[in-house]
Length: 447
Image 1 (cartoon, one colour):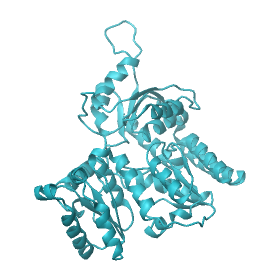
Image 2: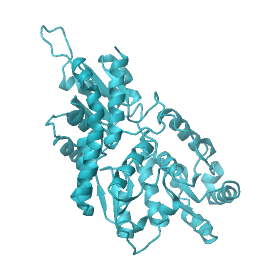
Image 3: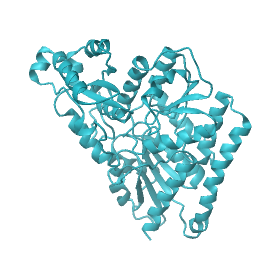
Image 4: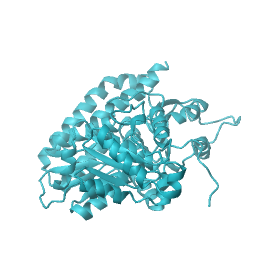
């Protein structure tokens, strides 16, 4: 076993991912069954790492919790959970209550399913998921929540509605721009004539989620997050799924639309109309900055640091659409060999033909070491090809690294502690304009 530790983790625990995802669902009240302090710790991590995402209704420090103590750990915490659910139902209005477990209650084996079943028998809309933090990171918690939602809350039906789809794969809070990204992609799919259920946006409702099995197809805009939930959905409800890398920029978005259209037999005319409209929008605005881009030399070498959604997507956008040179792509998740191949194959076939060095690394302090392997440091030699001008696209953890190598920096990936995020999103044609604007504004601000 490796003795390597992570000094500055880039993810919530499984409970954190499940709790924040549950709180992001419309009308849902999370109920934690865990030891004292878990909910508070998750909230303070959320507050300073997700673009200052607020608590919302019954989120943050207001999340109900059983706060089990020593006697509950010794004798079992089922009674304490039952009491907590009773009080929550009386005091907190919700359309659906979701019980989530922590490490301690998972370790002692509290049977939350039996407790949940008792309340379901009384007509309470409630489900429960075992999400002990040791089971994985926040992405795992997101997947576990979706699985119980699809298995226990979504109604089973043989009815399928043509051109009705479900959309997920962007993890609330872990992606500070999640709501903006989902909204942009929802609008894009609606232009294709699709009826979209995106679960976590302001346009969604629990009724739509309850009827999600009527969908013709599930669309997962990730090759890694929410895939297990998609497989379960297919097993339980018979709805197939299509997975895709998060589309950022005109090249990736056009490919995404055509891939989806082929799967749903959408007409070529409808596809062309949406693609041409999106590309026209993108290049009309990019044309405005073209003179400055060339005259002021806005092209940059780049280091991209992010999770399995963002790292490949950002690299492709920079290389294929913005004309930058992403020398190194650092993927910050723990992945198996198959996932490594997925990322490598995707970035090995960029339209520009540019080859980025792919690194899988969770430790922020190691990124400069990886750069030096591919781009040797200056050691007084007479001739030296400097890694300059350069740009680092990553999290706020990369600020010091960017300073050390004399690069500009923009925080896009988790943790996002130096930006306030409201409705901004970077997906699709529309979002990539916002990303271009943010990247180039950093360069202009330094002049």
